Image (cartoon, rainbow, N blue to C red; front, side, top):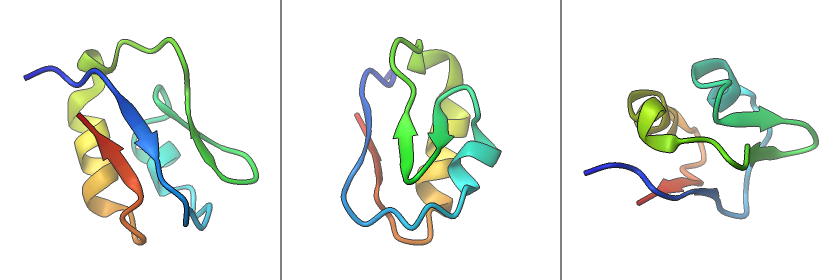
Length: 62
């Protein structure tokens, strides 16, 4: 099943781990944001790893 949507819920602590794991999808400024227009299905492994490793568990996808 391809990932079609990625988002970050409230509570991000801007640790930068998601951007380190998948810089094609995540960017950390004041808080982490999902980069728009990305074909998420190309980066599924990184998205899943970032979500699994997020210390505050705010990265979600479907």
